[in-house]
Image 1 (cartoon, helix red, strand yellow):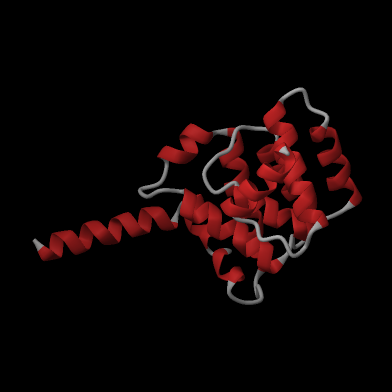
Image 2: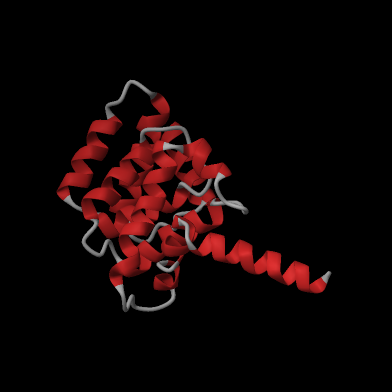
Length: 167
């Protein structure tokens, strides 16, 4: 039985190694150190874009929860910077602002700090004028994060900011 289990595990790992999860996952160490090889960056961006375009497929395609990997990839971009993928990452930040909240989306507000630019601020300004009150709130929060570099990007800071905007 042990040999059969080991063989099945090896086959599963081999199958995963041939998926987007494997190549995108190679980008995750960038949150711990400088990125030596940028070959995994497009796959990390593609992984995040896949969630935006095909959320149900994205959620069901892995043998584990994809949200931990999403958070790790976003934290890696926060640490390493956009690495030439500013436009795609700004699009992802704005997708998070313009939709209902999805698991681990809070990391997009922290990523926005690495992407701070007139283009991003203009897009946030447009979102702040949205007819959707939740989009206006998310745009306002990300703008506040950009304006106050000392503000932590946490659930508590969101709640604190939200309470301050209600007063």
